[in-house]
Length: 268
Image (cartoon, rainbow, N blue to C red):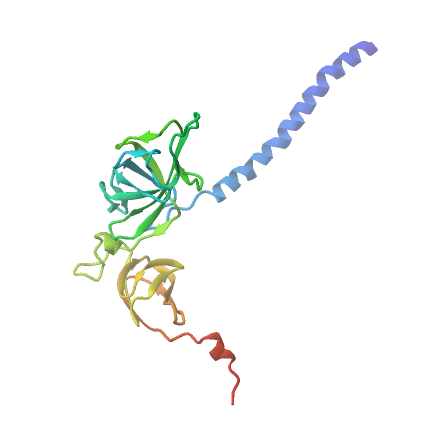
């Protein structure tokens, strides 16, 4: 075979070998990537929680104009659809949400335009707690309505969408859920836990999440849980429980927290 034939054969064969080696080297690398994806699959959302980024459809309840709006003025919105958690309505249709005028300038002479900025603030849930809202789904955007031009008028009935800011753990008893200590058997696989404290009005936490104030009855799933009772001015109270079902009653006697001066005070 001539030298020119050898050269031509090398030109054809070498790229094929390189391609095969590249494919064989890259193929095994796909398996760890798939395993990593499976290992980092998102966990299911926690129960009794109004989740961050939940959309809230709103409608402006009054006409707003840059000609007479004032910075700091509250702007009312109406909730357009029921918002539910665990099958219970926590923010009903017709409820009020509040925005705030953050910048307002009327149209000026010499052709200078007007300006009107409104940020969304909060809505009030069925239990009268405030849920913080934001303007965008994936960021902490503040400006909700931003208008710039001649005298700005936003008509009553303008529809927009806000989003829940941060996860909010809810006490479902305040939204119509019946505690399992009432007549009737508790749900399968769950337990009823009543927590009291002396003095009352302390925060109850289950595994670090707020679930209500003492005295309250809450539902917990089977397994190991850390229960904490906390009140300002008192030392934290905690117990680790292995829940298997049925009913549990906890009573926390809170002790007043020692002040730093009291702990460091020298003896006689």
